[in-house]
Image 1 (cartoon, rainbow, N blue to C red):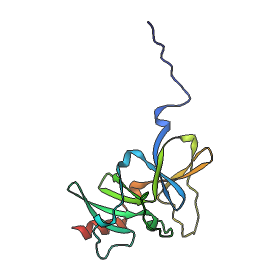
Image 2 (cartoon, rainbow, N blue to C red):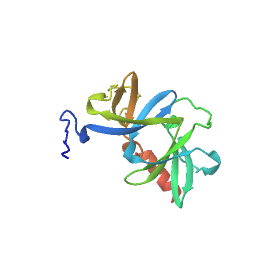
Image 3 (tube, rainbow, N blue to C red):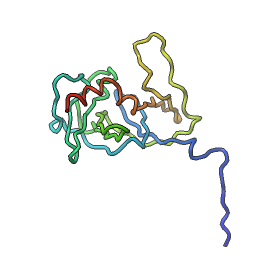
Image 4 (cartoon, rainbow, N blue to C red):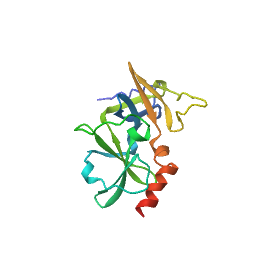
Length: 167
């Protein structure tokens, strides 16, 4: 029995990227799924506060023997604060230089985006809105995702303060 190999020359594996989609203030964001280690429910009582760190850093937690800084992306992105509920989660990220947890309002799904579905991040010259951590805007049907370079965001100078505070 001969099996025929069918190759779609219109797309190849490198043209597609998977993103974990999370929600902050009713807006959907996407991060590279390869950076995600796990997703956990947010329990404020398990986070230890640290003095003299930026307000978006909720503190640290012990995750199976590893001290993990917990960052509230809602505060980091200067969005209105919200009370944490049963949908609030911590996305544990395994980045090149550290493990970090980010608090988000919820996780909706994982999407596979093709290059044609991703537009460049808009430039807002002179605006207080920083786009240095954005990789683009993804569109799927009527949904728009803000694609975040989570590696760059979590290796910023502000994050170095957490490393110094936890030493």
